[in-house]
Length: 134
Image (cartoon, rainbow, N blue to C red; front, side, top):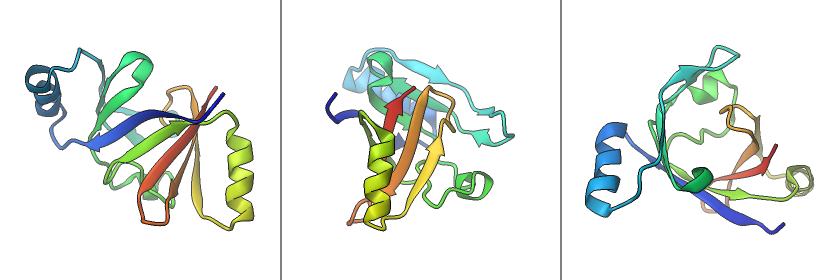
């Protein structure tokens, strides 16, 4: 399996309004709405909407500045947006990041969507998600 772009996460302060823009004006097909919820650890997971088959495509996400505090993440994937890539072996990527002394957040399956996720900042400060399907 090769590394593939999975989605681009875009901040949305009004998810319904953003969905309307992307569907009605831009012409995206309908997607999947996920209301806000509290996960098994009691952390708040913000409202989001996913365009694209199998959640591959555009993700609209309400920013949640509390993620870093509540989840003890060093990198907040919900503020500022991010690109996400599917990788064949997340453990191998973690080993390479560790060997290069590059900080990352090992998020596990924090968003409860069947992915092992890590977040890293590239040399320009862009947040990038890498995940493996579980």
